Length: 190
Image (cartoon, rainbow, N blue to C red; front, side, top):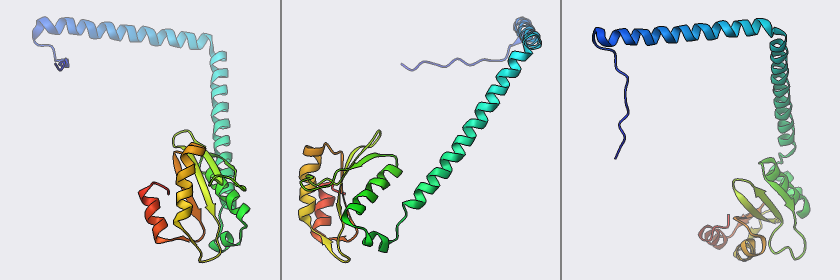
């Protein structure tokens, strides 16, 4: 059963108007006395209030300076992570994996490069507090080369069981075969 919300209504007649006036007068007196007591306390403890105001102002300035510095650092970090397509193609396999790791870190993930021989189809593993665990398989190819569905099978087969992935990703500087795209979409390998 829904609970009815009570609404205040205006007093009606002299019998309700007089008590309402007394309530308003009592509230005004209480507010006036509180303001007067606050003014007396401020006059008595003004040095303490001045110090508190100075500390609050200094804290606000320090917060603002840190925020601006963090923004500048982020812009500088982003500038170093920009690569042209030709620059990506010129990377070695290891540099490509490090670049993917750096992009995850830039976007708020804690990530590490794990790719090596026998890596069980994981070159970069990242963790995000809200999004979970991501496993990235990097395929740095020659220009125009295609990644086949065999890579997608390997990532799907090992990302969850071997690495505990919530998200499985294959990244390439080339393209994917039609079968690889279709299979990846069907089995949530991004």
